[in-house]
Image (cartoon, rainbow, N blue to C red; front, side, top):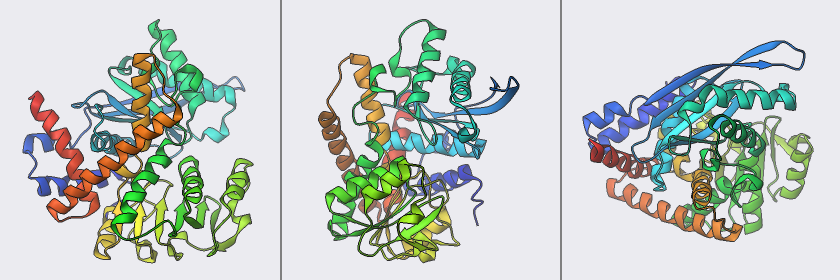
Length: 408
């Protein structure tokens, strides 16, 4: 069994499978087994009580053959080296699968941001940039929001970077507030991209918009996904967050759930509680929480016909094999949640041209990109007679490999 506490080990297992499928060049494969650069920093922060606390931060820059490193920064107590390495590898494949001229990176700080005041959070955010600014920039590595980071944190980071380098460079970070060069549509982009991909996947297996949906995780991505799918006519029958899971066969009132969440209240007060959301009767399951939520120990509970990975790495390799054996279609994270990085790229393009698009224009471009990427990945799946995951990885890693060979 894989060690679910070693996400990078899982990423390497996926890479090894693709090597065999594609007959990947040995030199390329060896280079893809480690990030190009991994930086670990100590960030001293003066706390409100006057004491100084040191936080550990990371930036993994995995591969930049196709363009500058790109990837989020998360603030979470469980951040570790294996996690940021894995996430930076997945970002490399993610930017490639939707054909963006970018590589992959990821960062994080070991911290529970809920325990920090606004001032402490700002000082930590600025400290992260001071520690890493030399390896960041719009032509080097472009961070973005991730778990427990947001547009305000990106604004502090941009401001700190521009103070240090002495010039405006809005494209050095994405997910910014609109007033600082953010893109319309960025807040909903991950979920919206997931909806576009879900529509294509559902068609392939004969599901329509009367399908029932269970969403595991109700943060920004999961909550927005529920809102968009509900508006499209899908029936959201189950949701879960850290407080537990609720189920209603007739469909949950998504607007009430979002209101409850925005007020900091528990979702479990708004429906029939269930022991495990994986076990509910639903056509579509959307894991939208953290890595390794679905393991060999709980995968057999799943009754869904389609699983769409809105979270990064929510299914372990062993659990993934079981889903494949059951002929359950899994749309992998690196395609399903690529809407966020796609609109981050659109944000960079707008920053570089100093010309900004409407939300409708952004969504139109996103829809075209996501549907085309799904179609190409499906062709790879059919070509190799393999799973959707391997089809998606084949498309992405072949693109990275070609760029690497062109440079050698």
